[in-house]
Length: 314
Image (cartoon, rainbow, N blue to C red):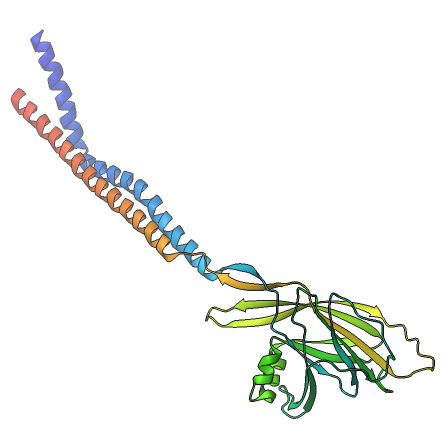
């Protein structure tokens, strides 16, 4: 019985030794398997690092637009620059609560109860043509729905269509205080858009203010407008070949809109996340290293024990 057991043990060990001798790369293959297991742990963390950095760069390229609204009771009175050409200002007056009294003697000179200034300057785009502008102080009190109502008159004209150009800028007082008013108007014309209102109509302009904060900290101002046009019914007795222009300026609402680009990518959050990822990478690499050493040690111990048993049996 003992002889049978010894023979069986001898056969098993002989098979182990044969497998070892026939497959001398088993140990290296075991190490490769361990390395592959370690790679399966490390690769997802490496991909997460790449994805985190890519997301951060995309957020830097595409900031989120932030829009805030500030309520005011008084605006800084804007400047309204008219380019009437041959037309003449007949009347100008401030009214409140959207009420405009009926016209008295339309087409005849009336009261000019607005603050105005006239200025000549060269065209900023050609530097040759002289331009004449009539600058009027706009409304301020948005709570009382202050408005400015103006009437212009144009005698006979050979043009098929008649219109008066105007532009808006943010502060009439800045224009008054400017030591170089010509340069001021050139800069305004270069920076702001111009609009028109036609003869034979009453054009009602409702303004809103938009401020944009740039990356360098500077601030730009832009006007948005909503206009409504009503036909003027000329009730003057004699046939007329002249044109009357009526225009109203009023603030749309008491809210100043501020637009700013906000970068949502927080570098400190990204650094903290990367630190956590690198720590996980370090632990994974350390674990893989220890696993390789442990597997090699176990393999060597098994081979050593097999050789000792074989020597003992021999």
